[in-house]
Image 1 (cartoon, rainbow, N blue to C red):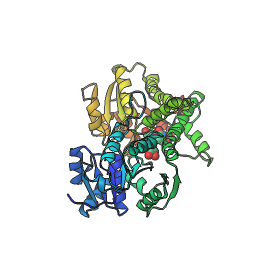
Image 2 (cartoon, rainbow, N blue to C red; image 1 turned 60 degrees about the horizontal axis):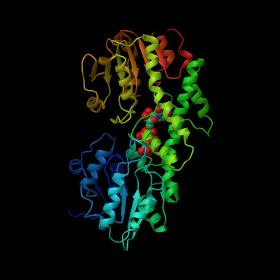
Image 3 (cartoon, rainbow, N blue to C red; image 1 turned 60 degrees about the vertical axis):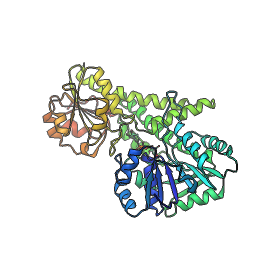
Image 4 (cartoon, rainbow, N blue to C red; image 1 turned 120 degrees about the vertical axis):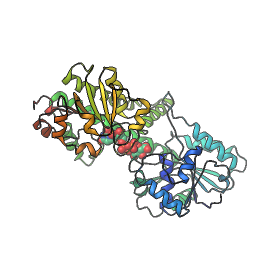
Length: 443
Ligand code: UGA
């Protein structure tokens, strides 16, 4: 295959593929590489192996226009690359530490094959000081001209391509003006704030941002528990806090807490960095502990209304870790399923797209665990309904119909999508998360 390219992207998971397609959208010629041959073959056919709105049509357009190409072998291309984005996975080891073995293989390959000036850019989330270690590795090569930079991603699943093209900021951690120039040039056309800083600062910005957002969520969830004990309403507390521009209204939605492939993993890795450097990072431990407790609170709500859950049928709506994705990594739904099954409850599960993924972990076994394509069928004859993920579809459910289908009109709203007043007026036994004002009110 012959292909001239401006950018090489190594690792084609959600971050890598969106980065590759994003740079193609900006008019660059992009070579994407992943060691998984099947994935590369699918991408060559224009098929995206995960659910991310807008990526597939953009990919197909750029394939047709020869602006993007894929290979499973980086070696022949590395000598011709001026800039290489490292987007390989950095999962968690059992200790919480980030597993950098995929990054290590990339460093090895680049070391072996780079020719002339090569800029290696960290895009995946890596612990601070990773770049310094990479630099030491590259220095072992005689006459090397390999430079490292950090350009963390702030992409949210479900709106990743949009976030790439319309970022709040672009952080460039660089050691030289040459690296800065190359990276600025790649992002030309994007109007946003560029923060140019040193590499270690850029690495920390990524972990600190995710930890801070997770902290906001755990903070409001802590307050949610307080509201339940004091007959107050966490939604109004969040509104009242959020009106202060120093706090801001976002990421103050109380509920079942955070999941996904980023927050839990990144906080554990950040915690590990703190430990390694002998710093007091206890705050992060509390964030994770509060988040874990959300599952118990949700289950308790059912128990407080229904008593022993053994033999009860519960309908659970929403299995992905958040709406608009089929991703179930660290999804609260998985822990809720485990906890309710351990109590002997029978579960009816629904999700618009994530069922195939959940089925791999929890195979269907009627009558204990049944998957439904229609949310109303999942609800039929259940002793209670639980909302786990706030898909739009659930926010517009026909509530009188829901009530008539349920055996007992119990709703535990893990994402506070319904208006408590409306639910009580319709005759539901309604429980939101942190909505203490309505907890003891009868319908
Ligand atoms: C997150 C960050 O938002 C991105 O900026 C970052 O780039 C990304 O991680 C990453 O490191 O790659 P993402 O995990 O896709 O993105 O999802 P979010 O939309 O941030 O939601 C995370 C979790 O927090 C979800 O489970 C969501 O339900 C929960 N959440 C969010 C709340 O419980 N309450 C809120 O107020 C907001």
